[in-house]
Length: 259
Figure (cartoon, rainbow, N blue to C red):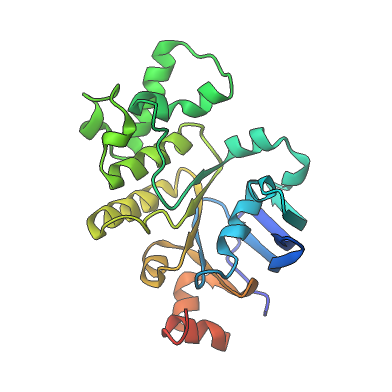
């Protein structure tokens, strides 16, 4: 792959020759890329190409699998994440998954502040109230749930549940949010609402989003990485990658010849 020169923005996250897999078989093959701060980076590619494994290496969730291996470097603000406490790292790098997963026994309120509770952080009730209100407003959910804060989050619609999960991650004030195909289980209306929310958040937090939805990557991302068979094929500004891809595999994927 040719080196891609991006604009002179600050880099918040960098991977260097990242290799990862399971049972001695590599799924991610030496990926090196630099994620710009305050932007939306799409990680795009067909199902099974290594996108999610790559993503889970960033906040050290990959290593939770007993048969997993990883090598290379992942740098957050220049720090090697594999030298950091993984619990503290996951406060700095939040994650939202494919299917909405509010904690089923918790209320909407306690879901939002679950990160503080699970980390043993004690806070005064007025401070928790403020975090809940500010965060739910940030994800445009406050007006819909302000009178139901103590009902379980699972009573919400799928789109509302996903916004609640984004709120739960945002409440910890992360530097980066990892979104693993966050709209794949949602209907078109809920998908549009989540896309609008993601775009509104990029000035607040850096977003890295895995997707196999080509139009979505084109609509919302600033830069795009195309991964195929675990290899980083191409990485650069989204508009340029979509209009004048440098690699034939990228062009074929974008035109629907495989995927």
